[in-house]
Image 1 (cartoon, rainbow, N blue to C red):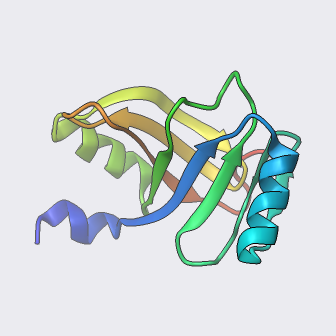
Image 2 (cartoon, rainbow, N blue to C red):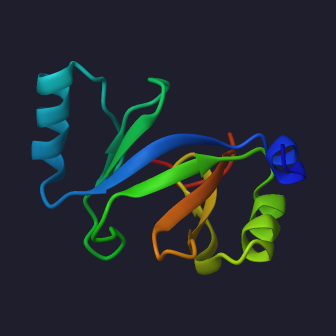
Length: 126
């Protein structure tokens, strides 16, 4: 196992979808799959603690055009160094989000992903 895996304790934790109708998406996922959707901000909602969680981003200024996978780590700064060291290109530097902090990067094939850490006092109140 590469050293960075054991140090970071990384796991795929969520998939964030860009949505044009946040209310419609909340209603759909709740009705179709019985998921409890938590509203974190006016334009952001998601599942919490249901395995790999689903995030719904309804802010056209922030939402990407493709799904965004989120990788949870225990040390965000170490993960950033590991991503850059492995050849990843940072597309958004570390920033606060509802529940913690994260950054975005593109891997060598061009897919954008995020890496995040949950922090009780971090992020944006919703």
